[in-house]
Length: 387
Ligand code: TGC
Image (cartoon, rainbow, N blue to C red; front, side, top):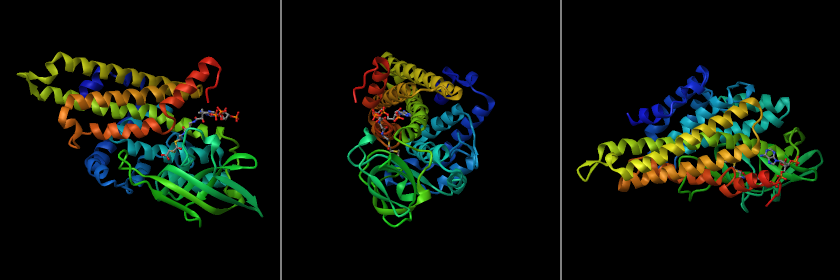
C-alpha cells in the first residue's frame, strides 16, 4: 500500500528501541480502531468523543513521559511517536493528549506538592479526570507576561479574578491549572472546576480542530484554599517549561498529519487516470510528491534529533522552536500540495486532507506562532531581543 511506500522509503526503525516501536504500534492501532472510524463525522458535528479519554488513559498515553503516580515513565521518543500516530488521525486528539499530559499533568508533576500530585496525577493518568491549562487570555497568547488575571491573598485564601481564552478541554475538565499575577509574580493555581465562580464555555465558531474543545474561561472571585497554589512555580519560567513539553509533542505530531496527507496523495495518483495514464506518471505530480516526501523526511529527522536531545536532558528552548516552526510550517505545505493533487476531491470530507489542513492552522497558532518562534531563534542567534 502507499502507507508502506512512504514508511518504507524513510525507514526509521533502526533509530528506535523495541519499546519505542511498541508504543508507536499501540498508538497507531488505537488511532485506526478508535479515532479514524468516526473522526470525519465528529469533525463535522463538532463532537468531542469524551469516552475516548479513559481509553487513552488505559493505553498509558496520558502523562506517559512522567514517572510515578500511575504514569508510564516512557522515553521522550516513545511519547513523540504516540503524538505522531495520534495526529496522523487528527490533531484534536493529539491536542487532548498534549493538554492533559504535557500541560496540566506536567505542571502538577514539576511544580506541585506531594499532596497535589497524589490527589490528581493517578486519576489523570487513567483518564478518569481531565485537566486543562489556562494561560492564554482574550487579549492574545503571545505575551503571557501581560496577563491580567490576578490572584490576591486574603485571610488565608486566594481569590482569582480574570478571563482566559482558547483553553483546551476546559468545559469537560475536573481541574484547571490557572496562571495568575500575584504580588509575588506569576503563580499557578489548581482550581477544581466545580468551584463557584469558575465557568468554561466552548468556542463554537471554530472551523479547525472541530473534534476537540477549546473554551472561554471566566474566573469571578474564585476563592481557593491556601494549598491550591503550586508551591514550586514562581514566575513565567514555570508555565513556559510546560509549553516546552507541549511544543515537543507538536514537533512529532505535525509530521503525523503530514504523513497522512502524503499517503493519501501517493495512493490517489496511482489509481486516477488523466491524459491516458496514471496521474502518478505525470512529471509535475512526481515533482510535488518528491518535494513533499523530502520535507516529511527532514521533519522526521528533526523530530528524532530533538527527541535525542530531550532524552539526554540537553534540549534547549531554541531547538524546540526550530522544530515547532519547521515541522508545522512544512506539514501545512505538504497538506496544501496534497490538496492540489487530489483536486476537487481534496476539498471534500471523503479524504482527510482538508481536515488536516484546517487543524494545522490551529497547531501553527497555538504554543507559539511562527513569528514567536522566529524571534526566539533570532534572539538566540543575535543575543538581541525583538520582543
Ligand atoms: P523572557 O524574559 O524570555 O522569560 C521570562 C522567564 O521565562 C524563562 N523562559 C523559559 N523557561 C523555560 N522554557 C522556555 N521556553 C522559556 N522561555 C523563557 C526565562 O528564562 C525567564 O526566566 P526568569 O527566571 O529569568 O524570569 O520572557 P519574555 O516575556 O521576553 O518571553 C518572550 C516569549 C515570546 C519567548 C514568550 O512570551 C513566549 O514564548 N510567548 C509565546 C507563548 C505561547 O506559546 N503562547 C501560546 C500558549 S497556547 C495556550 O495557552 C493554550 S494551552 C493549549 C490548549 O489549552 O489547547
